[in-house]
Each structure stands twice: as C-alpha cells, then as structure tokens.
Image 1 (cartoon, rainbow, N blue to C red):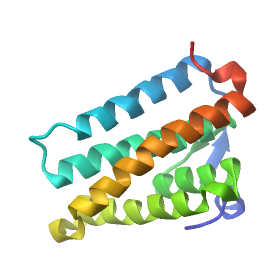
Image 2: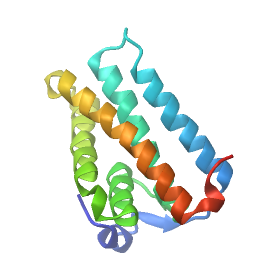
Image 3: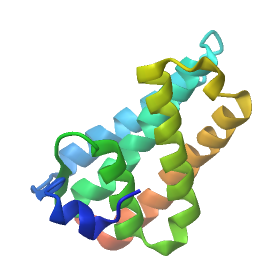
Image 4: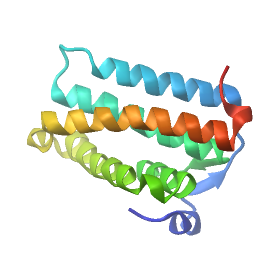
Length: 150
C-alpha cells in the first residue's frame, strides 16, 4: 500500500471541505452496508462485498473529516492509506487487514475468483467493521467534534 506522502505527490488526493451532513450520510451508509451483510440469504461474496463497502466508507469518513478526497483509480488504496495516516500507527494491523481485503475484493470483482473468499475472512472483516465504527467515532469526537452527527 502506498503511503500518504506518495499519494499526495501522485495527486491521488486533493483538498475538499466537508460538512457534518456528509459525514452523517457516510456513517449511515457504512452502517446500512454492515447490516445488509448480515442478511442470511446472502452468499459469502455478497456478505464480503457489503462489509468491504462499509469499511471503505469508514475510511472515507476519516479522509473527508481531514479535508481530503480521493481521485481516480486507486481510490480504495488511498482511503485506507489515509485512514492509517490520520488515525495513527495504533491501527496499522487493522489497515493491513483492510488492504488485504481490498486485494480480495479486486480479485472477486474483476477476475471472479470465488475461492478467494472464506467464511473466516467474512467474520474477520465483520469484526474489523465493528472496530472501525468504534475507533472512528471516538477519533472523530476527539479530533473533529464539530463534524460528529447529532
């Protein structure tokens, strides 16, 4: 995964102001995607996709709160790298797991490698999404209290 300074140098991100409403909408979307993943009739692929979408939205919340937006290809990688950069080294293992999930999602989406996903990975991603919700809400309250939704 490229680091934040490399992403800035490559113009993979740019400055853009956000609002409390945008953050609130992304939180709602992240939580709805996580809930959708729990629908029992879904395949492992569907569960993984919904959980990954949720995780990505949580990472985007961090970027948007810091006044950045991703550009063009590689935006998933940029969102995860931004999450790690702004939240800090305490989330390095979590960011690494998300980056692994990013690669799996790519293989599922573009190369259709259904054996690339297991029920264990779905459970790990579900745990990661729950942790993201907790970590990012606390981070947002500490760093950007004006952006915390009512």
